[in-house]
Length: 350
Image 1 (tube, rainbow, N blue to C red):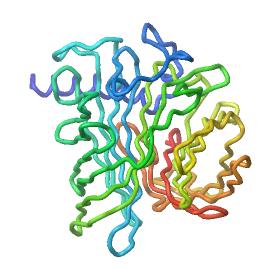
Image 2: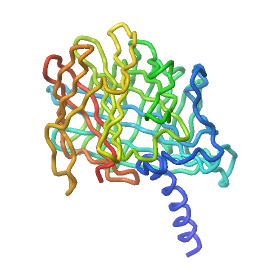
Image 3: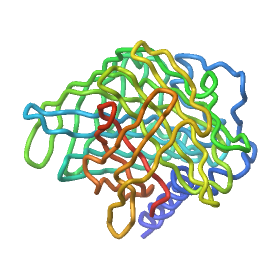
């Protein structure tokens, strides 16, 4: 009974702040309360910024991948490690205020497999080291001498994957040199990506092993108050066009039904242009019933400055992440005046 009580209390302490991290948008818009906050003009520093920032409240390491098997079947893969802090410091042992959550998923045209891990910081069960790089929770890991070459592993009850990522381009700093504004009021995060990995490896699904190749995208972000208090969710797109260009764009939904948007246009050579509020447009074309929820799964995305007018459509509309952090996330296919593949993450539809 004592052990069960301890585990129940631990589960509550782990889950509550993480829900606030990924879904509780009022929580993400609350005052920083003693945590550090991003400031314009502070340069990002590598490899140090590949590691954790315990004086900030919210942080994640996030990989998505678009893949194909030998028969041309499309697949998606996701690996995320979240860090959420109860206080702005790190200690060893069970009294650490650092909380870790891992999410992993594989999406096929017919199925969506997910798994989740929770951990308290300070025990070695989860963490991140900047160099040589390693991020882990239990046996799930992302590791390499640098972030240019990574091995990525995770497993759930119905899936596993073991893939290698090889960077084909430079790191990308979003916003103004990595300072990414999220609202008219000025809330912001530090945000960078490696959007140009070539991927190869193996998926293991209920029907057996599948050799896959494709492309992957790493996102890194940290803050303590990234959203305004009236922002109710977001729709985030990462798109790799067949011509080599890439697009990151998001719209933050606000309580008055307006949107704040931002994005980055990335050339095939890795040069970037920030897309200010209003220059990235995402309009819902089709809504799907996803477990009784109305979730947009087909979009029109336009960036007039770069002659982008595309349709973004879910590979599998039922890609719902039904875990401690409930949200929709899955691979998408691109058609219109450009073609390609990408990933879509949507929160606040539960």
